[in-house]
Amino acid sequence: MADGLSHNRKCALSTKTAQVSGAHTDFPALFTVANLPAEMFDADGSFPAQNGGGDIRFTSDAAGNTDIPADIVSFVTDVNPANGSAEIWVRPPNVRDTQVDTIYVWYNTPSSDSQPAVTAANGRNAVWTEAQAAVLMEDATPVDHSGNHTMSVSGTLTSIDGPFGKANSFSGNDRVSNSDAALEDVFADYDGTISIICRRTAYAADKAVAAFEGVDDLVIYPMDTSGGNGLRVFWRDVGFNIIDVNNESLANSWVWTDFTSRAANDHEAYTNGASVATSSASDPVGSTDFFNFYIGGFTAADQDFDGDIAQVIVWKTARTDGWISTLYNNQSDPGAFITVGTPESVGGGATVSANKGDHSHAADSGPAIPAVAAQAASAVHAHPSEAAVGIAQASGVAADGLHPHDAAAPAAIAQVPAAATDATHGHFADATSIGQAGQVGPLEAVHLLVTEAPILAPFAVGGPFDAAHGHLAAAAFATTESVVTPSGRRLVVPARRDTLEVAAEDRGLSPTA
Image 1 (cartoon, rainbow, N blue to C red):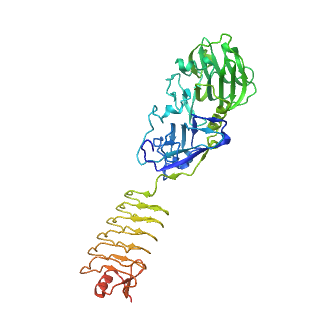
Image 2 (tube, rainbow, N blue to C red):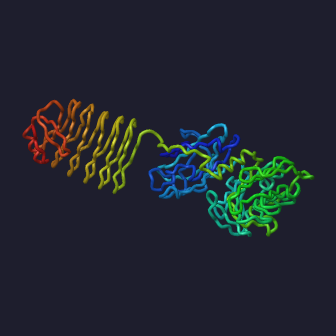
Image 3 (cartoon, rainbow, N blue to C red):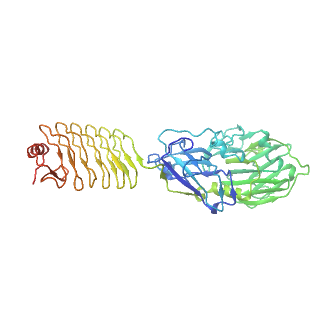
């Protein structure tokens, strides 16, 4: 990764061209539990992301060399992945309707990590470069995620579940506001867009969700009854009610409302991503003057909004029809917007470290993996290290004081080393069809250590015999006697009958011709 994190997993995330209209750069794409890998949310699974999302990163390339900005508003894991949740905004390089655009999510690191600073090149603010303000309502004290402005809250907001992530309930006495000139004057030159997601139990007159107030006033009423149920846009100096839709029926549901001004006489309104009205009205004076920006109200207290608001974004420039419809498609149904690939492990091979004190740890590796390394097992469990066909080397270290450590290596393995056993257990290293015979250290004082090397092993090397036990090194087609080991295998041995008998008696083996 470009930021130095060591991720264990990554997954491709690809746009669906049917959900995109036009070609867009710097587009803030929404990711939730519906369009991220399920394993990221599985708290007790093999590859969860960290609760809170500190280890989550996004890149534009499969190699992980080019980070792209991400705003992780929330990320929650659960033992049942379906109960996990996320609100993550990412800025892909491109979102186009002419081709599939793919980015990659990276997660599951061995250490506890944090998101980059909000001002970092791939941090929160960088997602919202096209916004003058992005107020996402993630809690009762919402902030501007673009980092451009500090919002003030009057009243008491109540955090609730939104269409994705969280939203705030406004009681009719609550407002979020800012008086910075850059924000309040976005529409002063007729080149801007405001995007709102809100909900109200019923249509009603004069319930303002957002307003630019001053000598001139621009007010957005998404669920108004002035001319019938629908969106109303009031712009005092341009012509009062320049937009007044009267045929909507969206009460008690989340509604996406967009209003854009492209020129002094070119204005358009959208509901749920579709254009519902246009206006060519213009200001006869040719200028506007705003003093404040409000969310949840207007100058008159009786116009304060009593309903729910999930987000209000003020864009620096007028957005196109395609941008607005693509934004709606992504936010209203994130799962339909993205194809989630198959998660994959990062890097080659598999490496595991020592297991817990009360669990066994198995490292299984499939074909064509360069190496499989396993550390010592715990004091109460065996640690098997299994390496399948096509692995160059498999290593295991000595077992503990209570259990054997089996390092089993099937066909086509070049070498299998095994360390000496402890004072109370035997250590068996079985090698099948191995080019070189296994090598073992000398025996200890109370047990027999058997190394079996069947057909195709040119020789087997073993340590010297001691006074009471035999150390058997068997080579196929080279001797005339054999023993049956505790594992049930027949072992061909050299004709050292005196030592063999002592050893066999000690181990409960039966010499056989």
